Length: 85
Image (cartoon, rainbow, N blue to C red; front, side, top):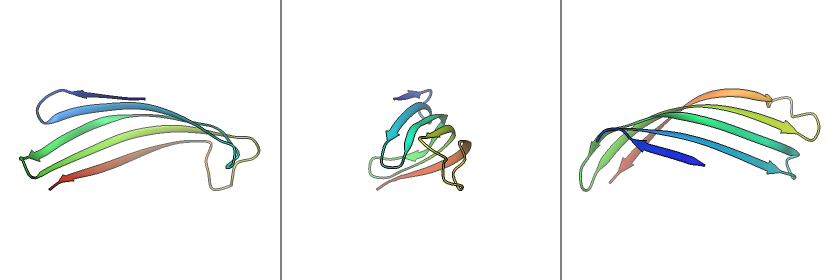
């Protein structure tokens, strides 16, 4: 589920939650929660540029022991750049 809200002409926010089950990967539950702002740097009729950042927290639960490289709980900070042309 995703919720987006426009605060001004140039600033909006986004919050989301996700869950996943994947028997093939032995993944019993993948729960994810995140939120962050997005900024419109410029937006013309034919071109535009946006920048966003989001903080994400997630939890992974496996049927058996998880792979050694995958932490059960983690947080990340991700950025996105959107280009319209």
